[in-house]
Length: 165
Image (cartoon, rainbow, N blue to C red; front, side, top):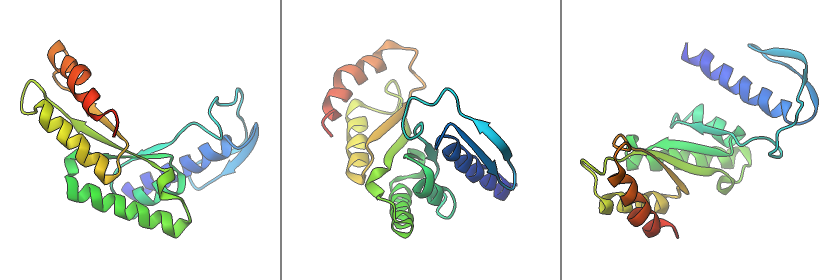
């Protein structure tokens, strides 16, 4: 059930953070328990490897982003209004929890087909819109990546146009 999956996700996040807080720890939760866990070798990143949570669920997902994550990912397919609503909700959760909203990296996942419906101009425009909303990274699915033309367009036209955003 969905509620149990969210419980397990939150418990996993707590367990991961506890594990990265020292060389040895214990953890007891509703779904997982570990009386003694050794974290050796330690992760290279400090205080822990970065955690990204994706989704737009206002009550659980975005609260967990505010509480546990270093980054969030919001799919472009939900539309600009829903993306903005998700960011506003995340900001509210951050305020409630005393977390600096700007400390969370905002990323978006988009699909681009430069050999089909999209143009270089439309992709640049979309990246600029996302940047204006507060997104710092855009991740692209490219179904036509097997052809060189879309990759060249990204390398030669799109990336240089948006690199300074």
